[in-house]
Length: 316
Image 1 (cartoon, rainbow, N blue to C red):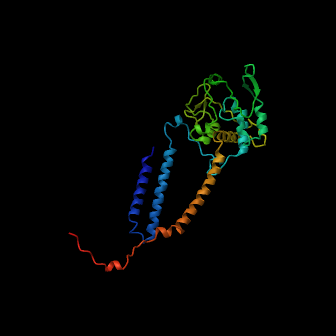
Image 2 (cartoon, helix red, strand yellow):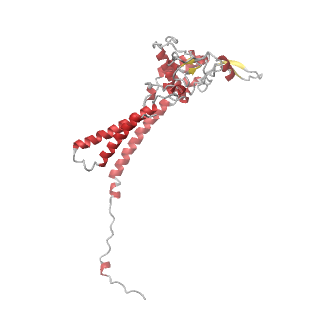
């Protein structure tokens, strides 16, 4: 909540700005007073922005229950015209397959979705064939096992929810297909969570099987820290530090949640260019074609003989 000090300062600045605007006509001939009026208005706007920032990022007693607000990390796809780093997507899928896939599923992503995004079709086909899928029935009515194909989904680590809870002390690992859209803070929150493990502060005791993470609501998370320096060996020689590994897997998860992002921004840029061109054409037409019609004056001049015609007598 706001303290009285900033509110009083903001009220004082706002009152000074309003008095300056009210006397604008009287001080129009004084450049110094006009400049001071502009400075007061800018100060009022800055004070309002500062108070808004403090409101959104204020410290309060319930902060641990809600979790720390994540910092703003410079992921390129977050900018207006930024796109995914597809080399990072490829490395991120490797991290997911070697680290995250032991507990988490990716139900909404099929093998074919990786083609021409991070891998070639042949590379994806080889990876899919490493897994066995239940298919059928065959001609005899029996189910059978076959190697994976491109249309198959990424395999799940557990057969069902009960098996997942039994293997994780009652905790259910969430599906990661839409995790960056399902969590407030998006990629910033996921990155801060994966790199935010630390020892609990003094006076905080963790139950067995839980780990302290200030970015997780409540601070106690069942998932242990799994990303460390060197946990994955990248095939392209990228340094395998914990921060790099986390950045790559978060980029991959962001792509899994928004695979259309690159195409959407490309179409948006084309739409901006098209509508900007149409706006310029419309302004030109308004100025050079419709001006004569919008500003013309229509006058009616009657025949001169009408002025000489006698007025008829009234009828009784």
